[in-house]
Amino acid sequence: MFCPHCHNKIPDGSNICPLCYSNLAGLKPQKAAAEPQDAPERKAAPKKSSKKKTQAYTKGSRGGKKSADRTPMIIAFGLIMILVGIVIPVVAMLPERKPTDVRTLSMAALFAALCYIGFSYCKIDIPVGMEKTAFHLGNVFCVLAALFLGGFWGGMSGAVGMTIADLTTAYVTSAPKTFLLKLCIGLITGLVAHRIGKITKTDDTKHVFRYTLLSAIAGLLFNVIFDPLVGYYYKLLILGRPAAELTLAWNITATTINAVTSTIVAVALYMVLRPAMKKSGLFPKVK
Image (cartoon, rainbow, N blue to C red; front, side, top):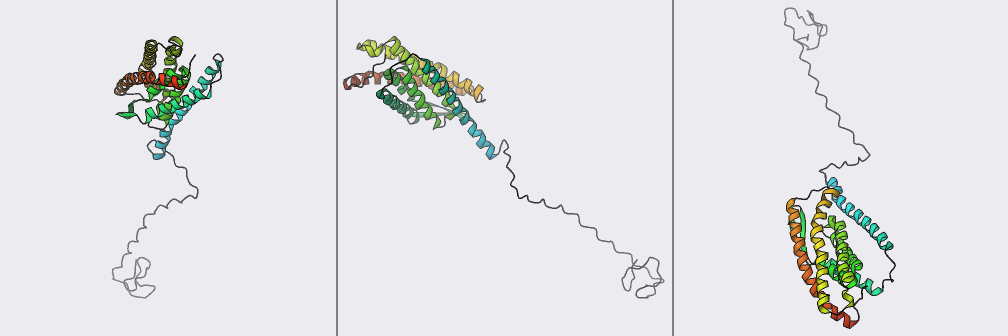
Protein backbone atom coordinates (compact mmCIF):
# COMPACT_ATOMS: atom_id res chain seq x y z
CA MET A 1 0.00 0.00 0.00
CA PHE A 2 0.98 3.66 -0.33
CA CYS A 3 0.75 6.48 2.18
CA PRO A 4 -1.88 9.03 1.00
CA HIS A 5 0.22 11.91 2.40
CA CYS A 6 3.77 11.22 1.26
CA HIS A 7 2.83 8.69 -1.42
CA ASN A 8 5.63 6.37 -0.36
CA LYS A 9 5.21 2.65 -0.29
CA ILE A 10 4.54 1.28 3.22
CA PRO A 11 3.73 -2.15 4.63
CA ASP A 12 0.13 -3.27 4.14
CA GLY A 13 -2.20 -2.68 7.21
CA SER A 14 -0.06 0.13 8.74
CA ASN A 15 -1.94 2.70 10.95
CA ILE A 16 0.99 5.16 11.01
CA CYS A 17 3.24 5.96 8.07
CA PRO A 18 6.77 4.99 9.14
CA LEU A 19 8.16 7.74 6.92
CA CYS A 20 6.01 10.85 7.50
CA TYR A 21 4.38 9.61 10.76
CA SER A 22 0.91 10.49 9.52
CA ASN A 23 -2.05 8.86 11.27
CA LEU A 24 -3.58 6.46 8.83
CA ALA A 25 -6.30 5.09 11.14
CA GLY A 26 -9.69 5.30 9.48
CA LEU A 27 -8.20 6.43 6.19
CA LYS A 28 -8.65 4.39 3.08
CA PRO A 29 -5.22 3.24 2.05
CA GLN A 30 -4.14 4.03 -1.49
CA LYS A 31 -3.79 0.93 -3.63
CA ALA A 32 -0.57 0.30 -5.38
CA ALA A 33 -0.65 1.60 -8.87
CA ALA A 34 -0.45 -1.02 -11.51
CA GLU A 35 3.09 -1.50 -12.47
CA PRO A 36 3.67 -0.71 -16.08
CA GLN A 37 3.96 -3.76 -18.23
CA ASP A 38 7.25 -4.38 -19.85
CA ALA A 39 7.28 -3.35 -23.43
CA PRO A 40 7.39 -6.31 -25.80
CA GLU A 41 10.89 -7.32 -26.55
CA ARG A 42 12.12 -6.24 -29.90
CA LYS A 43 13.87 -8.82 -31.88
CA ALA A 44 17.42 -7.92 -32.42
CA ALA A 45 18.16 -7.08 -36.00
CA PRO A 46 20.34 -9.70 -37.60
CA LYS A 47 23.93 -8.71 -37.76
CA LYS A 48 25.24 -7.94 -41.16
CA SER A 49 27.87 -10.38 -42.15
CA SER A 50 31.03 -8.92 -43.55
CA LYS A 51 31.28 -11.79 -46.00
CA LYS A 52 29.32 -11.45 -49.21
CA LYS A 53 26.96 -14.28 -49.74
CA THR A 54 26.82 -15.75 -53.22
CA GLN A 55 23.49 -15.05 -54.86
CA ALA A 56 21.50 -18.19 -55.50
CA TYR A 57 20.01 -18.03 -58.96
CA THR A 58 16.52 -19.35 -58.95
CA LYS A 59 14.70 -20.48 -62.05
CA GLY A 60 13.01 -17.13 -62.58
CA SER A 61 15.90 -14.88 -61.56
CA ARG A 62 17.87 -12.73 -63.93
CA GLY A 63 21.03 -14.74 -63.45
CA GLY A 64 19.11 -17.96 -64.06
CA LYS A 65 17.78 -16.57 -67.32
CA LYS A 66 21.26 -15.60 -68.45
CA SER A 67 22.51 -19.07 -67.65
CA ALA A 68 19.60 -20.64 -69.51
CA ASP A 69 20.22 -18.33 -72.49
CA ARG A 70 23.82 -19.52 -72.75
CA THR A 71 22.92 -23.21 -72.70
CA PRO A 72 21.71 -23.51 -76.34
CA MET A 73 24.82 -21.67 -77.56
CA ILE A 74 27.10 -24.00 -75.60
CA ILE A 75 25.25 -27.01 -77.03
CA ALA A 76 25.52 -25.57 -80.55
CA PHE A 77 29.28 -24.98 -80.31
CA GLY A 78 29.80 -28.42 -78.79
CA LEU A 79 27.90 -30.18 -81.55
CA ILE A 80 29.75 -28.23 -84.25
CA MET A 81 33.06 -29.31 -82.77
CA ILE A 82 31.84 -32.91 -82.76
CA LEU A 83 30.79 -32.67 -86.42
CA VAL A 84 34.13 -31.15 -87.39
CA GLY A 85 35.87 -33.92 -85.46
CA ILE A 86 33.90 -36.49 -87.49
CA VAL A 87 34.43 -34.81 -90.89
CA ILE A 88 38.22 -34.45 -90.56
CA PRO A 89 38.96 -38.18 -89.99
CA VAL A 90 36.54 -39.15 -92.78
CA VAL A 91 38.32 -36.82 -95.22
CA ALA A 92 41.69 -38.14 -94.04
CA MET A 93 40.61 -41.71 -94.87
CA LEU A 94 39.62 -40.82 -98.45
CA PRO A 95 41.95 -41.89 -101.27
CA GLU A 96 44.89 -39.56 -101.77
CA ARG A 97 44.31 -36.70 -104.18
CA LYS A 98 46.44 -33.97 -105.59
CA PRO A 99 47.09 -31.13 -103.15
CA THR A 100 44.39 -28.48 -103.30
CA ASP A 101 45.63 -25.41 -105.13
CA VAL A 102 45.31 -21.83 -103.94
CA ARG A 103 42.69 -21.03 -106.58
CA THR A 104 40.31 -23.70 -105.26
CA LEU A 105 40.77 -22.55 -101.68
CA SER A 106 40.20 -18.93 -102.69
CA MET A 107 37.01 -19.80 -104.57
CA ALA A 108 35.80 -21.92 -101.65
CA ALA A 109 36.34 -18.96 -99.31
CA LEU A 110 34.52 -16.69 -101.78
CA PHE A 111 31.52 -19.01 -101.96
CA ALA A 112 31.49 -19.34 -98.15
CA ALA A 113 31.28 -15.54 -97.93
CA LEU A 114 28.48 -15.51 -100.51
CA CYS A 115 26.58 -18.16 -98.53
CA TYR A 116 26.92 -15.98 -95.45
CA ILE A 117 25.65 -12.91 -97.32
CA GLY A 118 22.84 -14.87 -98.98
CA PHE A 119 21.50 -15.98 -95.62
CA SER A 120 22.26 -12.93 -93.46
CA TYR A 121 21.21 -10.14 -95.83
CA CYS A 122 19.04 -11.73 -98.54
CA LYS A 123 16.32 -13.18 -96.35
CA ILE A 124 12.85 -12.59 -95.00
CA ASP A 125 12.34 -13.70 -91.39
CA ILE A 126 9.04 -15.39 -90.52
CA PRO A 127 8.23 -15.41 -86.77
CA VAL A 128 6.44 -18.65 -85.83
CA GLY A 129 5.49 -18.59 -82.16
CA MET A 130 8.69 -18.32 -80.12
CA GLU A 131 10.87 -19.35 -83.05
CA LYS A 132 11.74 -18.20 -86.56
CA THR A 133 12.11 -19.56 -90.05
CA ALA A 134 13.16 -17.65 -93.16
CA PHE A 135 13.11 -17.36 -96.92
CA HIS A 136 16.73 -16.83 -98.04
CA LEU A 137 19.24 -17.23 -100.90
CA GLY A 138 22.03 -18.94 -98.97
CA ASN A 139 21.40 -22.33 -100.61
CA VAL A 140 21.93 -20.78 -104.06
CA PHE A 141 25.64 -20.32 -103.43
CA CYS A 142 25.99 -23.67 -101.68
CA VAL A 143 24.72 -25.43 -104.83
CA LEU A 144 26.74 -23.11 -107.09
CA ALA A 145 29.91 -23.88 -105.13
CA ALA A 146 29.33 -27.63 -105.54
CA LEU A 147 28.78 -27.18 -109.30
CA PHE A 148 32.05 -25.27 -109.73
CA LEU A 149 34.29 -26.86 -107.08
CA GLY A 150 32.89 -30.35 -106.54
CA GLY A 151 30.94 -31.90 -103.71
CA PHE A 152 33.43 -31.61 -100.85
CA TRP A 153 34.55 -28.01 -101.29
CA GLY A 154 31.05 -26.92 -102.29
CA GLY A 155 29.60 -28.56 -99.18
CA MET A 156 32.29 -27.07 -96.94
CA SER A 157 31.67 -23.60 -98.41
CA GLY A 158 27.97 -23.84 -97.64
CA ALA A 159 28.51 -25.44 -94.23
CA VAL A 160 31.06 -22.87 -93.03
CA GLY A 161 29.37 -19.79 -94.50
CA MET A 162 25.85 -20.54 -93.33
CA THR A 163 26.95 -21.88 -89.94
CA ILE A 164 28.72 -18.59 -89.26
CA ALA A 165 25.55 -16.80 -90.38
CA ASP A 166 23.53 -18.83 -87.85
CA LEU A 167 26.00 -18.13 -85.05
CA THR A 168 25.84 -14.37 -85.66
CA THR A 169 22.04 -14.12 -85.88
CA ALA A 170 19.01 -15.37 -83.95
CA TYR A 171 19.42 -18.88 -85.41
CA VAL A 172 22.36 -19.86 -83.17
CA THR A 173 20.70 -23.07 -81.94
CA SER A 174 20.33 -24.27 -85.56
CA ALA A 175 24.07 -23.98 -86.32
CA PRO A 176 24.99 -27.69 -85.87
CA LYS A 177 22.03 -28.76 -88.00
CA THR A 178 23.00 -26.21 -90.66
CA PHE A 179 26.61 -27.42 -90.80
CA LEU A 180 25.55 -31.02 -91.39
CA LEU A 181 22.76 -30.34 -93.88
CA LYS A 182 24.67 -27.84 -96.05
CA LEU A 183 27.64 -30.21 -96.21
CA CYS A 184 25.27 -32.94 -97.42
CA ILE A 185 23.69 -30.61 -100.02
CA GLY A 186 27.12 -29.95 -101.48
CA LEU A 187 28.14 -33.63 -101.46
CA ILE A 188 24.92 -34.79 -103.17
CA THR A 189 24.99 -31.97 -105.74
CA GLY A 190 28.65 -32.68 -106.54
CA LEU A 191 28.03 -36.43 -106.77
CA VAL A 192 25.31 -36.06 -109.40
CA ALA A 193 27.02 -33.21 -111.32
CA HIS A 194 30.59 -34.54 -111.44
CA ARG A 195 30.64 -38.25 -110.64
CA ILE A 196 27.59 -39.11 -112.71
CA GLY A 197 27.11 -36.22 -115.17
CA LYS A 198 30.81 -35.22 -115.50
CA ILE A 199 29.74 -31.70 -116.46
CA THR A 200 33.27 -30.27 -116.48
CA LYS A 201 34.45 -32.76 -119.11
CA THR A 202 31.99 -31.93 -121.84
CA ASP A 203 30.93 -28.88 -123.84
CA ASP A 204 27.50 -30.24 -124.76
CA THR A 205 25.22 -27.47 -123.49
CA LYS A 206 22.14 -29.69 -123.27
CA HIS A 207 24.02 -32.35 -121.31
CA VAL A 208 25.48 -29.74 -118.96
CA PHE A 209 22.10 -28.11 -118.41
CA ARG A 210 20.37 -31.45 -117.80
CA TYR A 211 22.83 -32.62 -115.14
CA THR A 212 23.16 -29.18 -113.60
CA LEU A 213 19.40 -29.13 -113.11
CA LEU A 214 19.27 -32.74 -111.84
CA SER A 215 22.13 -32.19 -109.39
CA ALA A 216 20.58 -29.02 -107.98
CA ILE A 217 17.21 -30.78 -107.60
CA ALA A 218 18.85 -33.79 -105.90
CA GLY A 219 20.78 -31.69 -103.38
CA LEU A 220 17.89 -29.39 -102.51
CA LEU A 221 15.31 -32.20 -102.44
CA PHE A 222 17.44 -33.79 -99.73
CA ASN A 223 17.24 -30.48 -97.85
CA VAL A 224 13.45 -30.24 -98.26
CA ILE A 225 13.03 -33.69 -96.69
CA PHE A 226 15.67 -33.66 -93.99
CA ASP A 227 15.80 -30.01 -92.89
CA PRO A 228 12.36 -30.05 -91.19
CA LEU A 229 12.82 -33.62 -89.87
CA VAL A 230 16.32 -33.10 -88.49
CA GLY A 231 15.25 -29.74 -87.06
CA TYR A 232 12.23 -31.30 -85.33
CA TYR A 233 14.14 -34.15 -83.68
CA TYR A 234 17.16 -31.95 -82.98
CA LYS A 235 15.01 -29.60 -80.90
CA LEU A 236 13.12 -32.46 -79.28
CA LEU A 237 16.03 -34.76 -78.38
CA ILE A 238 19.07 -32.45 -78.11
CA LEU A 239 17.62 -29.16 -76.88
CA GLY A 240 14.64 -30.70 -75.09
CA ARG A 241 12.19 -28.24 -76.68
CA PRO A 242 9.33 -29.91 -78.54
CA ALA A 243 8.59 -28.04 -81.76
CA ALA A 244 4.98 -27.17 -82.38
CA GLU A 245 3.20 -28.62 -85.39
CA LEU A 246 2.70 -25.07 -86.70
CA THR A 247 6.47 -24.48 -86.62
CA LEU A 248 7.13 -27.75 -88.44
CA ALA A 249 4.57 -26.87 -91.11
CA TRP A 250 6.12 -23.43 -91.66
CA ASN A 251 9.60 -24.96 -91.86
CA ILE A 252 8.46 -27.36 -94.58
CA THR A 253 6.82 -24.50 -96.51
CA ALA A 254 9.83 -22.18 -96.24
CA THR A 255 12.30 -24.97 -97.12
CA THR A 256 10.27 -25.93 -100.20
CA ILE A 257 10.07 -22.34 -101.47
CA ASN A 258 13.80 -21.88 -100.80
CA ALA A 259 14.56 -25.09 -102.74
CA VAL A 260 12.56 -24.06 -105.81
CA THR A 261 14.03 -20.54 -105.81
CA SER A 262 17.58 -21.78 -105.22
CA THR A 263 17.34 -24.37 -108.01
CA ILE A 264 16.22 -21.81 -110.59
CA VAL A 265 18.76 -19.15 -109.59
CA ALA A 266 21.71 -21.54 -109.15
CA VAL A 267 21.20 -23.27 -112.51
CA ALA A 268 20.74 -19.93 -114.30
CA LEU A 269 23.89 -18.47 -112.71
CA TYR A 270 25.95 -21.56 -113.53
CA MET A 271 24.92 -21.60 -117.18
CA VAL A 272 25.78 -17.89 -117.48
CA LEU A 273 29.08 -17.96 -115.54
CA ARG A 274 30.44 -21.21 -117.01
CA PRO A 275 31.41 -19.84 -120.48
CA ALA A 276 32.74 -16.59 -118.97
CA MET A 277 34.98 -18.48 -116.54
CA LYS A 278 36.20 -20.76 -119.31
CA LYS A 279 37.24 -17.79 -121.42
CA SER A 280 39.07 -16.20 -118.49
CA GLY A 281 40.87 -19.46 -117.61
CA LEU A 282 39.33 -19.55 -114.12
CA PHE A 283 37.04 -22.52 -114.74
CA PRO A 284 38.05 -25.35 -112.36
CA LYS A 285 38.01 -28.87 -113.76
CA VAL A 286 36.66 -31.26 -111.17
CA LYS A 287 37.61 -34.93 -111.54
